[in-house]
Length: 617
Image (cartoon, rainbow, N blue to C red; front, top):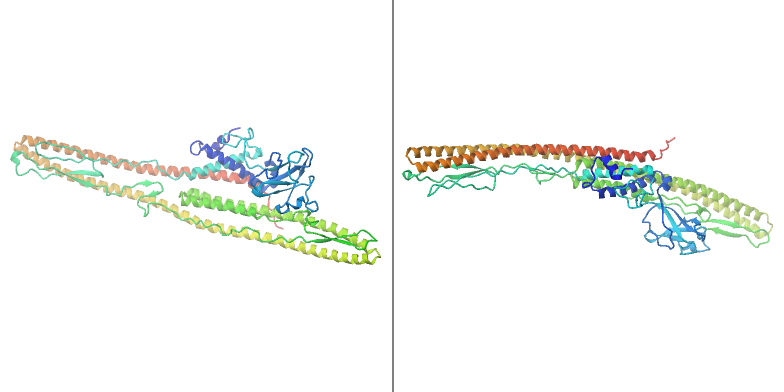
């Protein structure tokens, strides 16, 4: 079978190595095993044995901490090696009662019990011990993903999973692929590789006539073109002396050079783009069920031993006695809290993608994921409610059965008492009838209270679901408008870049033309003076002046070529910015499409497994 890395690369078209890394993939695979396990068991708890793992044999209490994993069974040896007895689970409050031989909750080696104490450590009763075949072991849902071959921690190079059904391994690869795409999109905020061209260095010309001819070039600190201001020959023309040729710089650095800088665009008020997302948590934060289950009634039993005794012995049956033989149903509101945590975490991630990364596409995907998480949360809550109702039906049946047995035995005892002529027995019979009537009333009241409790639980769960859906709709509407505004502002930023570039090009062109005009005028003046010098036979001055003219003309031509090259590079840079922006936008859309497809297939696998809701009559 192909490795997980090969499977994920095939699903996502991503190359795992540097970005994303193999370490990231390994972690996503482990997360996938846990996610698939939890989702599947929330839908089909009867499949729990498919994910079972067993601990080693423990010979002491407080020796095994499973860190909150779901326990399937705890078994204890009954004094005979490898003869295991199922341990019933008890509340920590009963840890003394299970050691008291006079208590109804007493735990023996053939009827052991277990509980979880500090740090989630397992304790059995009677206590585990070394020797004597008194050890215990725990069957639980695996929470440490390992490979099937070597039982090593799961990584990208493995291809199977231990303590996990083989027909669901593909979901682990799919989950890891979804997370890799999500991470890739999160780190793919548009970052351009195009580099603005270097500002050209333009030369100035300095010409002076003293004892020697000096021509030098210097590098200006800003973008500038050189003009030559030539004032002509001085009054002592007969000596061949020429006034200085004074260089004048035409500065075009004032033109705002356009630059696209990731998410920041020069020209905005603060240089950044932000979008205000509504990150207020859902207002429905209290998921605890306020409905309180009624107290189990204390029923009184009648003990009758036949004629000749002085009185009938009446014994009270405490709560948790006969009726307590079946666990009273209770709604596990921690499941609802976990469901809300899934929704809240996804909302926080969506806000982070907008506030920190300004990633519109990924934030939009997160909005869709929030809806999926809400659906998942509602499904989890509905399953828990179904379990509560199912337990309640079983409990009610147990109550009816226990009540029938209890009443039947009391009727027999009452009949025996009624047949006696002994006055004391007659009194006992009357007392017994009072007890029977009282028991019947207590049981009837208890059944009514149980029905009311069940109705309250259903009502509170429905209210939570309605309020959560309402809050989600408000959150989605608010943030959808914020995302639209963010998209519009991003487009405005790109438009601003293009506008600035047009203005910059026009201003550069205007200043270049001005510089060329001034330089041409200076050259013409120098040429006039050259003609005069030649006419006056000032050959040495004419030669130097001719050299200066040629140097100036060369400098002007070179400046023009540099400016033309710079303008061409700026145009190329603008085209590259547009092309890279478009390319990365298309790539993000492709990632998003693939992410949506994988996510839909992943969720569909659990939707198919979910039990169908019965249609209302």
